[in-house]
Image (cartoon, rainbow over all chains, first blue to last red; front, side):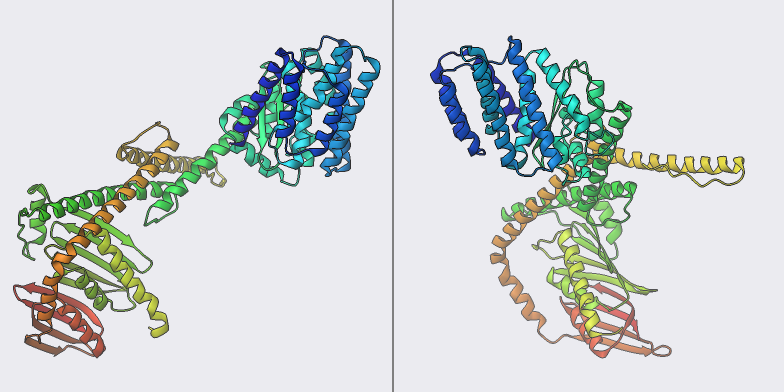
Length: 474
Length: 164
């Protein structure tokens, strides 16, 4: 989500600049500047500085990116270089005082502007240039980055926007500069902190450990993978491989708000060469597998009686549960219908069942009678297993419980509650377990549905078991 | 899907046997899983893609849906029951009152089998709640029921049990 927002804003930002190049009057840009200042929430010192600059620079309107003037280009490069040095400086000092850095940055730009002003006072273009930088950083301030890394992202942002709008030469040069700096900044291609171009930024954000970076990248949507490689390792390789594609990939690291731009182009990216595809496939494949496993776990959680933990049985349990749910739904729908029918005083077809002919009749009744209701449920708990089958009127309950306490009493109570007339009961002690089979009939007019029966039985039995330890030592 | 490799034995032939057995087992396992997944897919009405991951995703969604409809229906039924209860409670009260009358016991027979086991046979008039009372009585007496058989026919309940 955050990356989408960022991209939108980036696009806006770019459009802003592009549109900025097209309009002339001073007032509009001044208005824009004020807008920018208002929108920027983070950097007050910046704003102060910029107001001063505005006073100095005054009537300049256009924020012009394309630089035909080589001098301007040189200035830009200088500024870039300086900013890079600032980054490096920060990195080297383990700089955490962002404000200081920013002030330095402002100073740097300020110095450059002064430099500009000294050299070319009459020339409008450099002034355009100088306005560009403060406004760049201003616009960058607009983006709602979390405060501490935003400066870092500012620098990278400026490079990227510069990238988009400037000529190739400058881009090359700036990247070259970046390339220069990288080895110094400790670009370590193999480390998980991710090396290559924008490395100096990353080490500053090392506290979130590399695995999180990796996970984060893995969790990015696939679009980003296509653009710039969403895996750490893939990152490196994408840049290596996509040198000629001219992609600009964006990655937004959620924890830190650091932006990494995998700016590709015709430049050879600085970075170690690896087997690009293998690493990328490894990462995405692993991601896929992890997700897959997660889904199996989700499925397992849904099922009421999970047995084994391996995939095949999870699927089997799911199948059974789906069937059971379908039956329950059908049963309940029938019940609702019946209720409505009985409300309207229509007589149901009577099914006559003697207890002796239970099974055969119920089977026969399955074919006859459109409103026959049937359902079957199984529920297991730690000590008990309940199997409830309902065919129209008849409720057949099979109960298996561990031999601890004779629960017949409670079971019969429950059956009474549910208004089931016991027809037949058989059961007893078999080895370790008590096993009972209850055949009962539903009273007319009562609403009983299978899951209710099962749940109540289990509830009661478990309650008794829970009550056992304090009372008896059997 | 992990591929487990068996540790090597000395012989190559034995190796191959193990590996092929393992291969076979693995193939069967995968086949089983795939068959079941197919079955799952056949149950679920909504199918988006046909790959493994979406089978499971769709199944999850379908289960959720079914669960929700079950809940809905049960709520509906409870509601309907609540409205109907007012009509029916009176009848039930009458029934319960009848039960309070002393029960007619037709026959009781107790035989001693062997050791501590006895055999009980009771014939009672059929009313709701009889079993409960019976069980209460038995538990009060401290018998463990070994096995039970209860049948009803018309108005009578026959209760036979061996207990100790």
